[in-house]
Length: 331
Image (tube, rainbow, N blue to C red):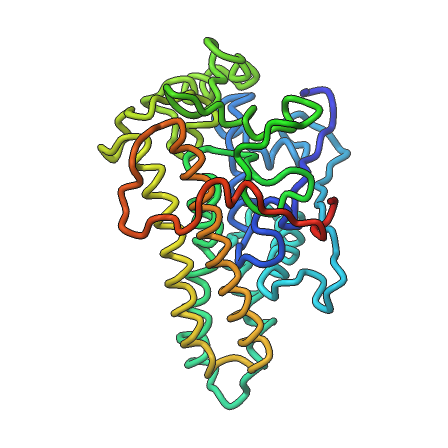
């Protein structure tokens, strides 16, 4: 739409990223989106240049964010989710900023004064160093245990809390999870290429060509653009099914390692916030297992292949399907 000033809308609230219980830093997502190259006028036609009007010479520009302030004292529920508000604000004014530097600014201003008896050097090395590493890969890891390899929109109906890839009763096709993953006995994923819905044609030719070809489509978007056979050999050498399982299981293990790291942060942070984040990480670990088990048990009904890990789901698919959340927002 070169003749129309347009603006992106980011979702700062975590309705689709673990609600208010998961430690997920969205600054990397915002930056990835802004840096994405549309190739609308050749290489370098990034989303950020569309946003600031420079690509099409628009004077009216802007960027929006959906915040959904909660009733919690800290507004966000999870202390670390405040970083996403900060990252949105910083990138809205200067999209060239590094999300890691933004996270460092937020970390220092938020937590540094909680233990004044710890030197700045020790605090930065022991607390900031460890937590920065966790923050910077937190979103990618959330994708592993929720929607790996380009899966999308497989959360529960209405309140969007928890997994429900079996949902198929929405009043519109695109309100159903089954619409997005298209799982069947052959494979998984939505064919958006010219042989499918042809949504791929909305992209510029060079971008469309990359996403259309299984060999060049990044794994992160594979199942968004392609319906892939269960035994398709991925770049890793594994089949689609085995790689899907590996992603889900790795996501859970990383959350568990995050819990271990956080246990060692107690000397560098006040007790109240330490205990709150510790509690929330416990919730996140349980919910990551819930996502992993529910999704793999459901997709297994189509693949008919075993889950190649010793830690098998301890509940049945029927159990996960019967879970109800009458007090979840929107229900």
